[in-house]
Image (cartoon, rainbow, N blue to C red; front, top):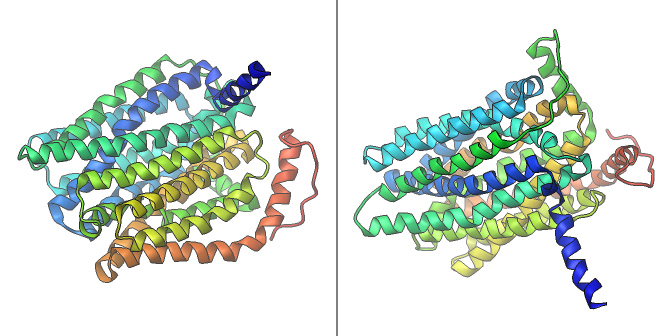
Length: 443
């Protein structure tokens, strides 16, 4: 009996890591996990550097805006091209270009010549690269896994990798920046963070080069790019489950994701800390996200995920309000754990549902709309929260965002039963669930 009891936890762990059985996905997971630590180091150091150089809450919003607005403008085209081009080669190109961008930031910072205008240009450059990379990478996951039923697990493990790095990267960046400040250098610590990020891209490039993904069937078309853009838009908007998932992501992009823009303000001016404090806040959100990712990876069925996702925004909005008015570090850290966990389940759940519902020949275009929904809308939320913070204070700005999230979530709950019924019928036809259910019409 003891042997059997000992085998159960091992079986549970194996089930949670089942997508790693495939060579291609295992390679990508390992390389990406190392590279993402550098990505999060750069993210934390960049916003701290901007606040140090300008002492401006609005400028923090502008840096976020220029870094994310390309997704709104370029991602739709990137989605069409992802459905046409070799996704493996596109991923190699975008990762190499991102390494060059990090190297340029490092060179400017380590030389002591960096100014906020350099940051704005390079943030926009990275935003342009990521507007192509994200929809392509999301669509490419389906080619990395060996079995279709492992796709939800691969998406959850991607999120786990992303947020495990979020736990480590900002904390390390905070210590590097403060160590450099103690030695009398203004921006050398941030420059070291940028340099380490550039080096970390070698891991993911080596992994992607070693992959041997299955070839997609050749797709020839005489239709124009504009026609395919319209086709992808009509497909997503005309299919109620996808439409509401994208609307939910848009709400998160406008009200929740901009909270990271104000973390330097909370760390320095409200909690009276330093770059290490900002690192702890980001890492606390990363810890919560790891818990959320483990929850998603351990689920044995997609069924019921939509109900969980419909209720989590209530907890997230409340946590943002409490964080906004917290004046003690331990309470702020606890609220960041809750925000990170709920956000992870919501975003990872949306990704999972979209990828399992969408037709494969439209996957790139739908994932480009996914990118627009949660990244392309965030710059407007970041600008709004920056201006609100200047006029009302950072605490009230974030509290307003959290309150809006709760109110809109409550207004949308009555639609949940109809959407659940329609999604269940689709999954029944795919073999994901056994019991059929006839969906009522969705308006």
